[in-house]
Image (tube, rainbow over all chains, first blue to last red; front, top):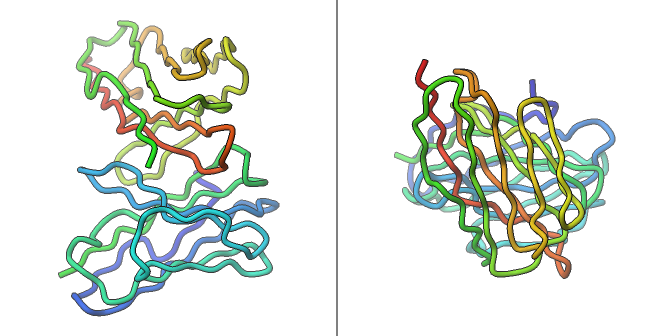
Length: 112
Length: 111
């Protein structure tokens, strides 16, 4: 069982809405990364946080944002949802930015 | 962004056969990771490699860090039905901290 916890597991939204996804990393891990996984594009990097600071950002529009709290938990937000945002959103945590990442089971987001 | 080429894209093999897959990059990496993902779950870390030429095993799985630092290989010996899944490679370059992922190899094991 994955130690990274993502909530919710499934979410259905309509176009134009916004959504917030949550990720609790493995205890002791301070780095959290987010990925979007789709059948056609594979795993695409969204952003990485370490000690509440965004360290890296992928090539996604500004509608995608995130943050990390002092307890290392992280949230990502997507505003003005589009049909193409339907995907599995995966969170991964590690002790630090250069360490191997461990994934949660993801949030399956469907946009109607 | 950086693209990792993973091959083959899919494999259909008989139970008991050995499996080989590889991952190549146009850039040098200093870390290679191999993950397995099963339906409805997130990727699970199988093996981490940190040095060129390094060979690391995890049970029936063996992975190698290519000496050019631009490729990595994963072998599965004596495959069993529970090996079914999608195998991803991931690489991290010297100059950045982002992990780049391959497109995955889908493995089907026929009993």
